[in-house]
Length: 253
Image (cartoon, rainbow, N blue to C red; front, side, top):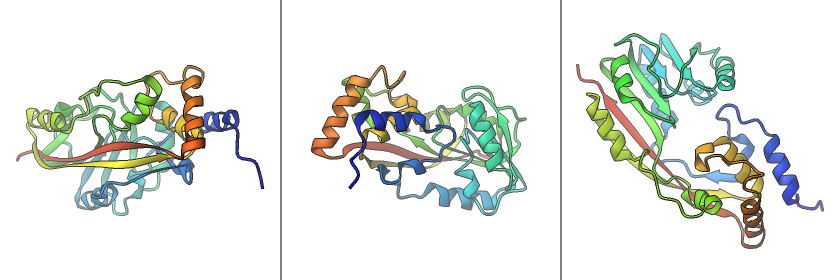
């Protein structure tokens, strides 16, 4: 029987894995997260099948958008991180979809009233005024977002107890949408059990989702990682709770 990987081997393995895109298959067998009951990919596919011109904002590597089977005649995606832009262009070539590099918090590089559907899964920021501007009257914005205090157990484990920022609060998102002239037609919440089976999974997660522990590096947090590794070894998997919300809005005609 082979010996389990050591602390240092797990760290080295997790640091060697590329973080481009939003493919989380490396976590298989090492970490798991429950999925929201609403099924974002299913709703996305249904909305895309009804659209004529659609925009996916902050597409990552395009992996989620690539799952649709009936794309609209015009399909565009934006992404801010250059390595992800190249991944998304390859991933979405067959749909086909155009991928435009655009900063997350900047104005969208499109004329007003040009899309009847805009979507975004786990955006870093939502610029509601810009979404309202590029939607046609009668258009829809659909988004699954990370809620306030998501996996706060892991944040606190690394950094000590931290105040929960309300920047990702679902109620605040709805208020932002209404202030931009949009009508909120659906708002749902979910708390999802997230389990890490080894310290390598923790390190890869913190590299891939850097806002969980701002400024994270293995060297900077080696002491906390070693303590958590020992905890997992002796007490079992580390459990946190992800928070998600689904928001769907409509631009009045």
